[in-house]
Length: 116
Length: 113
Image 1 (tube, chains in turn brown, purple):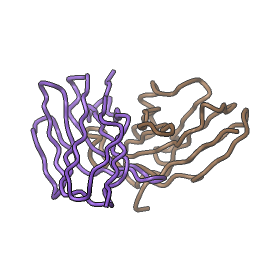
Image 2 (cartoon, helix red, strand yellow):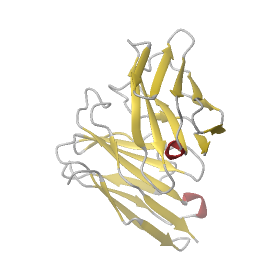
Image 3 (cartoon, helix red, strand yellow):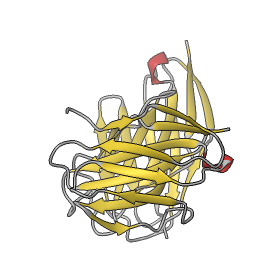
Image 4 (spheres, chains in turn blue, yellow):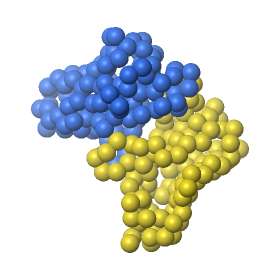
């Protein structure tokens, strides 16, 4: 596709429920990033993939958060046993080159997760 | 790690006036500084960026300046228009290696017609 695609666009989960958020990066983009954006805040880094390798997961807030990109294309962010503080917009971004991530860095529209 | 601070948090200007948003960063190894515009419910959109080997960059009504010594950079919007109203985020990264973006907390710009 022409851009980074994320689904679902909106997700309401009951506290304790598991959720899975999907990101389809731009075709050929090697680097993929997940960010969490709380209401009224800037995006905060969660994790980074170079192809299928998860090279940095330092931003994941707890072991309830897990991300994968098994074939180096589509990525899934999974949150287990959701809690109210997980409510946020989850943004995915991809870029063309791992040597210069600024090249072609593009965000998706995000998934708005609300935990009730 | 990197820490990016952004001021002001809100800014209101009359249409046609200029707007300036300022950011500071803490990691001297950061070398790439993009600015994003985010409208309500939309994705962040890159509007301009600057690398550490350049002191100023301009694109029509938008300009960014960088002072590496002081570790601060600024966004300047001239001849503001109502459609410039949005939240603006500055960010910093090393662009290679550990290349995730560190964002400021955002500035809500309102342009009053």
